[in-house]
Length: 465
Image (cartoon, rainbow, N blue to C red):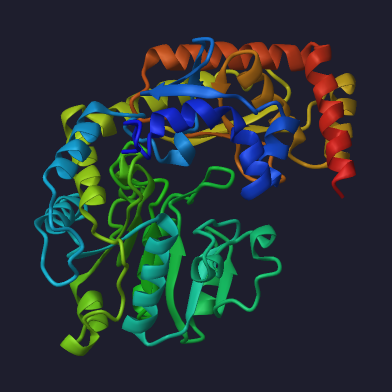
């Protein structure tokens, strides 16, 4: 306390005094391109609070969240069970991170996680999705004694040096070489996979069962066939479930949609956090862990300073309890099918709408070249400037006119990805589909506001070259 009795640190007062500086603070001290980008596309909103699948601005208007913090908010924002668990663990004043004891919370969370993947035996806890992937890469290389990891074209597994080595997009990799000795293979191409495995130096294939970029599903039967090839060549299958796991696709893990698939290592993060405390987990087979941690001398050969911290473990346990108590996986499956089917029914109605695909509440809406002359000329104008601008044209009015937050599913893609909180229901489906139809009607009718914004995007794209 200061001499006048006020607190030295008062978070509420600090936010009240300086919260209005948020965009300027980012421009001065953080990534200066973020506020610039947000202002360019009209996303520079000020959200005052959030709950479940909604935000509210200072005027009390609600916004439907169909992004979930890139999939982090699986059980919605500020779920009361997760909040209470964090209050409880803080109030318990546990002797956390002593480094030389065995806290019960990591063991309990590991036990619970493994119950969803009964063919796996052990868990390593880190702090993020990219860290979970890094762990899997290290464990696979050490366990097999081989240097090379295969990944799929257009994959995204994180942005730290190891996970960047298995990132399938050059835009993320450019300027950061040399990376690890890894090789891209087209998803679904078993002949190419077998050819690479035949070289005898492959430790593993790391794959997203559904790629986040473009929402591309692994072809039916591919995961199991790839697994059989890998094991025949004494290599491992790593399933990156950072975005697809914890119920997102209508199964707890997305690989479980294909019978007989049992990855050797599984990476989890995002929704396991409850949106509060970062957590990553790498689940694996017993023999892999025992090979990495082969003696007491190697007890800390792979560790994380904040891994297994009490707050993260409590959040994870609370999230899994909510998933079961509120039947979240079933809701993701049923609500996702309702949303996907209603959107798919619009493909024949709109020339610009090419395809709707996905599983559960991970849905991709892809746009394509129209047939009519007027629409085709506008489409060509956008494509000549930069591929992906039409999808951005749809995302912007969804937010500005209909107060729905969505995202374009990767650079240079005409795909919108929907990954809302897994708690949404028919009301949110109705709201999104109604808004989406209104935006598509405007685009097909030559709505001036929408295509004027398109010309603005063209100028920005050309000017940024």
